[in-house]
Length: 352
Image (cartoon, rainbow, N blue to C red):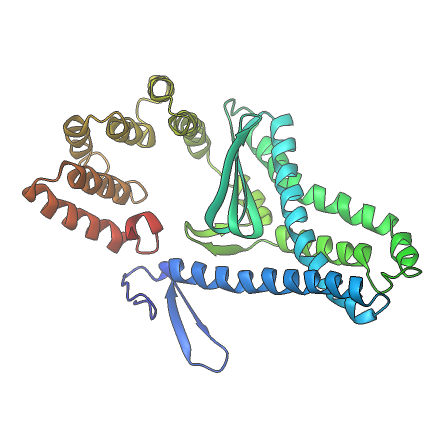
């Protein structure tokens, strides 16, 4: 199939989505373009109501008492409340996850490119350009009872939405009280009721959504998939914990600690492809380019049948080849980069 927007082609139909656009014929988009399209829609959904809310506040100052002003403020409230609900939802995941024995590595709000990133309480916080939706990243070091722990972690977000729904239900008197002021027509509790009810239904109804990382499961589908995981898959999740710890240290410019996490993981999981590839790749960050290339090239046979990691291996070899920069390696870099892109054409890192 071929993307009608960027022209990328692949034989794997799972990388594409075909749908009819308003006043247009059916179009086929790769997941990357589909994600960009949805991001642009959410951008409009957020910024138009937010702008109307600011305008309503300004007009209320100039002409108090107009119900039209209150209507515009309602739109602005929806935009701001959406950010707060997304943040509280992800904090619910993080809090319940920590209680269940998870380490929370990152919490991000929004879609699109990052506009703000900082670290507090051992968690990396990220705000994206369009503040709609979010994700919490966490893994347990102890995988005993993993399915129950993962279920609690996933349910933490919807539980917050349920609590906010009940609070809004209890505080409906606030809408009545505001009706006796110049904010008559402003109905914050009513909108919080509807928004949290929609969040509960949307998060718990099993489905996948498009993103720059592929089609990701929502909370409801995550719970279903958790209880279908095999012991081998759960063991691989523990191996991934060491990789996450190493990446956290790398982002904090602590390459020595990152290397220790990877070495510890490999001692416990010597057959882990993820950790083996990470160890070879981290030589790049240590500026050992020739050694990194030798280690990565040596993994081609081992990872040849790994559909998830082999494209990443090819991309990493191409990256090292480009950094070394000799003419024969640049040709290999082009070849391997194209192979990786053909396998997973929607991945932003491969497109870059």
